[in-house]
Image (cartoon, rainbow, N blue to C red; front, side, top):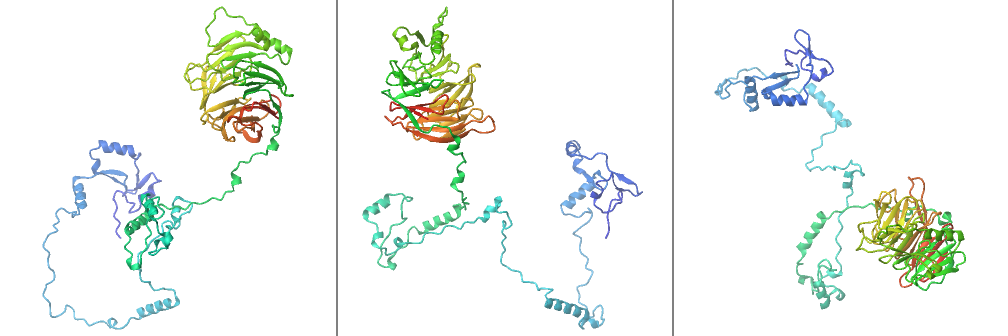
Length: 614
């Protein structure tokens, strides 16, 4: 073996990777180390050299000396000739005439006449010994004779060793093609008479689409098998069958056996969530038309109700006795604590019930008003009641330009808001200040038909519910803070949790949406317990309870615990369905409200009654 190497580096024909960790790359003829260049070229240097060096194309890197060698013109020509498959030497003539060293004449005498050796015709003992050893090894089974090669083609399963849970594992889930239905009596050449179609059935069959027909052919009767013609749709059916076999995907679906009870969330038992109202204790009778709105006093001693019989009635809660009835001259759409409203008027009433000191201080607040020097034009006319109306309990009359649907008080008692739904005007919501008899319209633009409004119990926020959205406004900054999407078609009512961070909305499409204001602008939970439209929703001030009344005549009380831990979601559990109201003119429960201190709930209905559940 001849080792060809560069005389400048005497390491021989060894891999140059062995010198990667050393500063030198080999030894010269004098035995001195050949050191590597100080800096190796990187990709950037290589690119710059390629762009700027005109001799880059003829430069070759020598691994043995770690240097770049520029090829001469003769060397480049040599490379080009070798690449073309030509000889390296330029002067070599590959087409020279061949010299015949031996003559083509057959000689009589051989070149050598030496006699054959004896070993050429006597069997070899060495070969005999080798053959006997091979025969013995074959007999003992140490050597197995070669099997003839199989000419049949071999196929390999690519996914034989794949994990069945892997992506490629699905190829093992082979599903055989479904077999065709076996022929029945209708396919017979002589079917029973009940399988043959009448003329009417034949006409119906011909008018139907091919997909709607029960049979793809018409059963026919023949006298013998010889008289049966060829099936005209045979090729078409075979072709469709082939299409079904290779075009229609087949998949094996793994059925998960799940116990349905495991899917139901584990909720606490209602008896562990007491107290909550369970039984109907009192029925307040006296109204002659449907009772649209009710409200309880902060002490829980009195209940006020407004009805379509043009009256506002004050009830004593514990006895069910009507203490006072006031004629207001119009259907009462809404009452709030003690202020009811007629059709276009909001009446501020002092019923003179309860503590005389509170009654007198209320009158003193209203009469202490001093009109300003310059009267500004307001959307509402304020009028002080006198004479007979004053004796009946009327104190202030607020005449609105349109029909008022709802009145709601601020927590501090000096402000109230009224709602006049009108989709064509921006004058839908008004905020009134009683002590200064001042009214203002907080909105310049119309954002939709306003359904109801509410003040935040703790912070200066104002909630406005339109048909589909609830907008939250900051009264101090006078800007929109949030826009809640209820996913309901038409909002009917709204209530805010006493803590102020949660809100419920009832809708006419039988849904109740619970919002966590800190969590999202979409409902945290959507409840569909009622069968008909919801008319009223309410929270309890002290207990973790909320209720909803609907046109199905029922009041559903739910446990709604809100935790101080922000990481824990509210717990919502339906605990009781309260029934008692009769459905009148497709209307059931119109309003619900809780007792301020006890776990009791009041409900007013279209059957002219108010009911107390305790």
